[in-house]
Image (cartoon, rainbow over all chains, first blue to last red; front, top):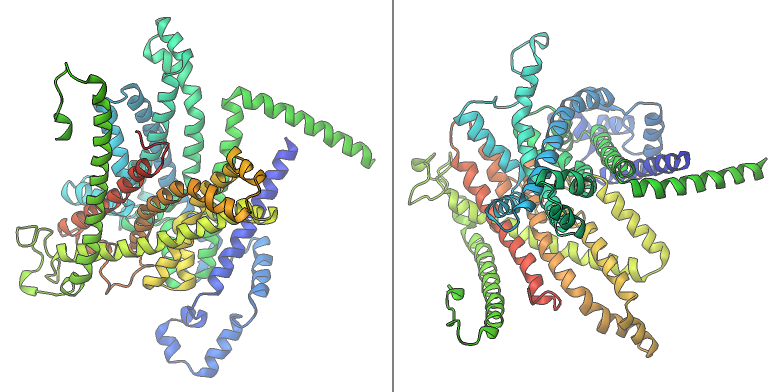
Length: 343
Length: 292
């Protein structure tokens, strides 16, 4: 187990390192002039050539990329992610604050889409080739081709403008002091964006669960269960659920990447002040430090999702747990042997 | 229509399934041709309409959908239908270019990974994992930041972010093919590696590649629209669905729903058409599945 943890940790840090290198290289080849981006268009135009050179010296625009990267890495290891240009505050604090807002949204959407997709998939499989199944399939097919941001716009038109059920945007009511904001307000503002994300996210998991469930419904052990007279609920509960849970969980944890991407678009439409909106602002405004930090954070989230999926296999599937355990004990033995050699 | 023609049950029952299968294939072919014609027509119409798409007419602004303006008009009196077609045309062009480039890249990298030295395989697999570890939109924002915006910026951005999935598929296919008995046999018969690749492996991988290529379009088009919507893609003066929708955002609270609803629907139809093309083409070109 220790070895597995160490291996995953090593992989994690290598990935983060690689992502930061890629992000750094991409940012450094940008045609955007850092000095111009930092001081703004008008100030840059009114500036003398000497002043520009002085500033570019001050911000290190002339130092080579690898040296800048090492400087940045050294600061990051000490917990300093730099200062955000657009928000004029330390990147770490902005990310922490934005992440809290986005986390509400993404958790809601992730849970809803997973549960609804899973149930829809099972229901469709039970009604294979009948009306209900065809409806679910058509829904998934169309939803897979729908742009997230367009759906967000349509929801905004229908539920906020025409029906007036939900606010037009933001994560909190405007013009109210933060002490008066209730939990209800927060949830009320998050429902519509979360709904958009869930409706889109359902398609993938529903289709996969359906396929898998149809396979299992045709298996011999299920036929046996049926001939014994087990009810549908009991069949699903005792024979189907564990088998279809594994791919569904993998898929749902792998979809963190898509939910993150979707949240960028949805947050933009609903003016929801989360990480996604910050990423767009950073990208458009040339805020390099914030952009790189968000890219790294998103990669870390995706990695965490995959890691959790790997760990959950053992919890759900006793076969994997058992084989995992033998390899685990083997590695312990080997580790022990190595240790004795060292001594 | 076609399957309503049924023969009397007394004669030739054994032949009936054959007839229906042939009809299915033909029906599919017709469907595919219709889809292709629709897409090409959109591109051509868009190129011709791009001039009139920019035409403003302030006496006819903010009109809802009607017979003369099926999609309504915007706040400058531009006809939304013309704008949509022009926008779709740009989107399809970007999608085609990006998807084709991306698929070619995927093919080359997969071939190098599967047939080249072990180190190349390790590196390419690692690169795939790395690129798939960052959410697409974030990666696209980073790339757009690096190479700038505009038509070429977004095409290159989409092209270099969409190959990993297809590369994985084709790499696995080539690896499987390399171990196949018929390839081993050809090797023993003294065929040169180039010949084996050309005669035995390429035809085997081709259906996967073509389907993968066409199924890349929907992703490419959706990501182009999303990126343009966020402001990283095409410039505002170019007609594009992303631009139309992001401009429409400001007029939604005024109740001008047609500015957003129709362009989005048009985009969905185009994406669905490509999806349909890709998933059905497989049945026509893959010998294993052509009887379905």
